Image (cartoon, rainbow, N blue to C red; front, side, top):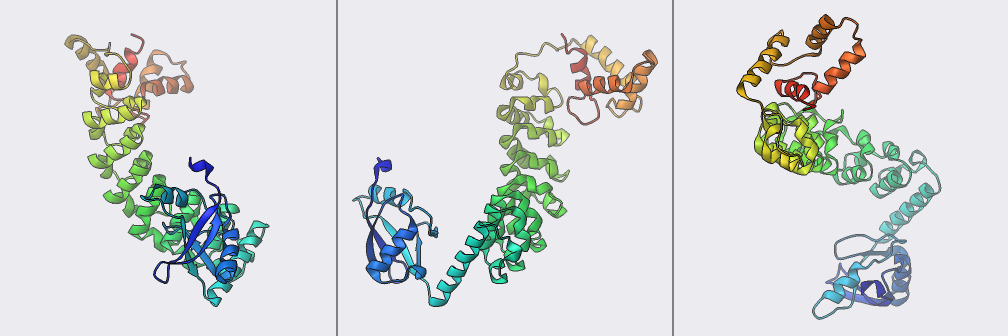
Length: 366
């Protein structure tokens, strides 16, 4: 029913003088704010250049914005129904001059003028700078004033428009915990950006914000935090395959692994220990019971063979160890063939093959 709303009376409420009604205009959801301002000038004598209108949530309308449906929905859903309302504030003469200058600068940018050619006073204007970022190119932010580049709210808004803006954010802000947490909620992968100090990759709360935004942020966390169960759970619940970046201990943790697999079935390939054979985890991954369960005698033979190949005794089969073995049996094997075979074994993609990967490869066609 809201889609059928047509122009109707809308009260203009003076927000600076006790929320009293300044006047009433006729408007609908598709009505431009510019038209409403002209009606206010006609009805209340306030020049359009001095009129600022906002909604109840504090959004400041621009001249070419449409009023939108929200104020009409709010009014209709009130008990009893109310007249829709817009909040009014009057600019001083000086403020109006600034607003007009801002409008002129924005119009120039619309028509192809770059920020470097805009008057310096508007390089210090967050609204003009953000307009250039959104409508021209994120690199326009480089011409903003230092004050703009050091403003937390403006730079967070710039990052929401484009993560490329990270290159133009003040170095001071990357050292500010409040800003960094906000930036991580915008894009968790910013944790790995070169301008982000290492200390934030060691900060549990910052990494948690990053992982809740993008699970793969775990890749950039410190080694200690990759072993933090709460952080890893946040990461795998956002993106299951982030399990690949968790510590070995947590890749062997039943509850961490099953959460990861429930989020993304492919996460099972990053489980370690015996968890890839666990019935519940396999079921969560859409796989049937494992057909690779071996009796003790057979398992002992496989372990013996693995340890024979593991010449340095580190518990893993390296590429060099496999290469030496294969060249003994077949000197004509080329490096591409050996690498292909090794990559088939190395399902964890960590350049080392553990015993479970070795078994999976041997019994892969069973």
